[in-house]
Length: 240
Length: 240
DNA sequence: TCTTGCAGGATTGTTGAACAATCTCTAGGC
DNA sequence: GCCTAGAGATTGTTCAACAATCCTGCAAGA
Image (cartoon, rainbow over all chains, first blue to last red; front, top):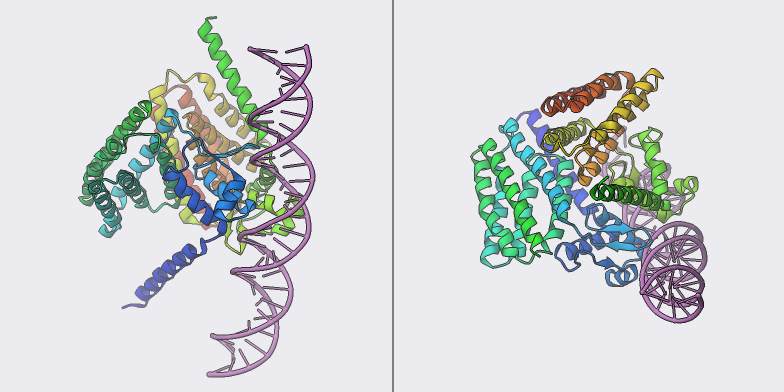
């Protein structure tokens, strides 16, 4: 082993440790409160349009009003809450225009990521695809157990991991926001099975194209996938 | 004038009034404090790496610590500040990887917007291009007055307005963040003139292609523009 | 000389109470 | 029936205090 290699290993190790430290540091009362609220919103316990009362939530979450308001700010900038000055915070009610907007962004980002993989194919170890495979399996398992919201979660994670292949912190953050907003839409739709089931197979097909390094086909596939998904959501939305 | 037109005008007027109200409503102490800090950061008074002391700024800005911290949160999610738990808030220090990341996103979004204009050409009144023309003129005027930071501001506004043509609230927000972060980079570069001057003419050329509705050419032009700009910034960055 | 451990001070994280500003809703007047 | 006024509730902001954590400097030990 050369000194260069040893240095490289040491550098890599330092990076992983730094990442671990950053993860541990992420515990403040405001963020813990935000975590709980985030789950309540994305799981539908707090439906779109609902107002979040400060006094009520300070008691439930056992944090002070100031800390709660910091949690509100965090979620506001994730798109999961909106502030109305002097009136309070609300769970956003997205409309069809938002669906179109969200999907436009998704198509732009995700298709570009897949297309971009072709340029850096050699440096992309196949292990990077494992999270995607796991997500496909998780969706399949949840479907067999008839847990359709969990299918939706796994499908979304698939797309988050897909974006992750680009190694762009900003794309990751943007996608996190977009998918969180998308979840807001799912709760006004009555038929979760019809909404999520088709995409288990489509995610698997997309994964296999990536695995085979047929990136152009994968990009075209993904583009059509997202167009279809947008239409499906719009239809379910109108039929609610 | 038909009733339809009258309705359309009334609708447009209602929208402008609503926008004005929203702008007036946007005056909370936290956001005013954030405005001041934002300018200090983007204008370079607070250089990358600087720490913002809470007690010091409460006195200067004449707001309470809690309100100041809300202002910090606002700027954090614009990418203009970063929080380090129990250590404070700092102006981010971007590196070359961030430049590459930022420009990748800019290319994806801006080129897609221009390309997308072709599909909705008929519904795009030429008046929508006026802000872009104003920005080009502003940049030109600032250049004649030797005010190069102002040239940079006008150039950035040009791109913000360009994204605005897509009528996507989320693209607007993302671009706002990206350009704010980009400004962070400008202050570590010693030669503002060399950095900004070439893009006055290039923005004008891009504008003229848009005006002529030659969108595909405009998209290709913009793509090369952003690639060149990225290289220029990277070089200036390495030479600092 | 270099590292390690330990105060002590400084800064941030969080709380609770208080008051001001604003909104909502109801009751009353026209 | 519609408009207006005012009471009550909610949010916006401040202040003071304490807890938790970080940074600094110094002394003890290898």
